Image (tube, rainbow, N blue to C red; front, side, top):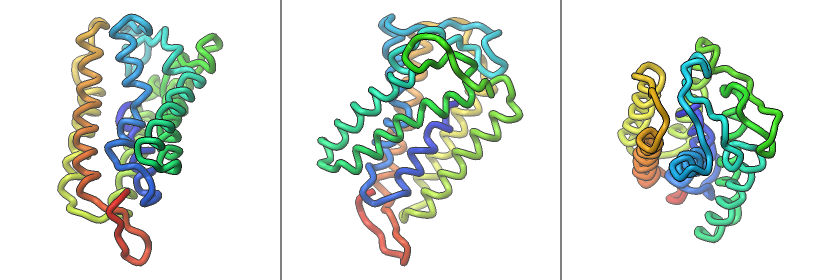
Length: 224
């Protein structure tokens, strides 16, 4: 799953004026993958390219105990909670950000072939929807589109920035699905992924700075 991971970020931003801004929530949504590709770059976690890994994704994610175990994801979520709560002096915002981080694991469980763990050791888990594109693709689009629509409906501001963000997200997802697949793993591939996350996060910051949370009755609040 790629852009589907940002669905919880949109939902969290739409849930309360005390939630973190959208840019922070975009970082939280992919924090586990930020960690994985960073750790893979320095050799702590590892993957390889294997066209037989799954129908939709040639990445064999065979060693990622610190990011894609449930306990590992929980540790990243706790760290995010603490940083956001202290940085924003808002425990509620920290709790929301931590939940968005933690959402990464169950969303991955839906699509990954068995390569996720509870604590970094077998058994390896994953429902494997990457082997069923007719299910995985509509699911990812539905999650993302539904959450995006709720965010736009619950916030006020110019529609241009969120539409640009959505267009870039869909473009990246199309490249992920239909573009040339990597032939080998290595720093260049990892940096490509990190760059994609950085671009989407920068756009989310722009969107979040130009929209305000709206409660029922039409009142708007400048902090999300």
